[in-house]
Amino acid sequence: RLTEGRWTGGSQLTRICCQPFRKTLLTIDAENFTVVKAVEAIVDFIRAHGIRVLKVAGPRSSARPEAHALAFKIITRVRRDSLEGDRV
Image 1: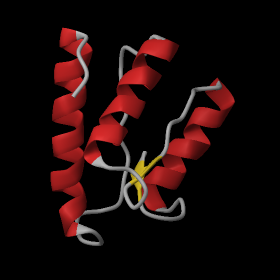
Image 2: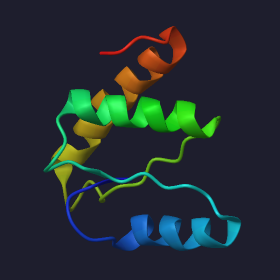
Image 3: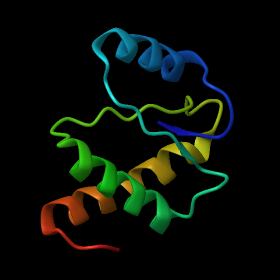
Image 4: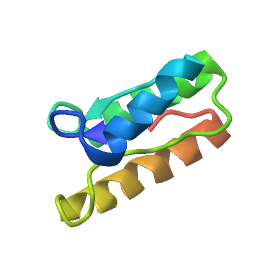
């Protein structure tokens, strides 16, 4: 989950839906993580938990227009680093 603050909307629903299935969650607070640190945390999470499908949740574009661009940048780098096995 890419966030700034509390769980709301679809992010909250994602959290609720994961609980009965004991799915592991990772929260990246955009206010406290640089892009590089976010990528490192997500790649480590993927490797540590053998993640094959990654669900990304976050605020609506209407509420946080810049969130999409940030998430795209982070996930693009995560894909590159996960596939190559390299760090940023």
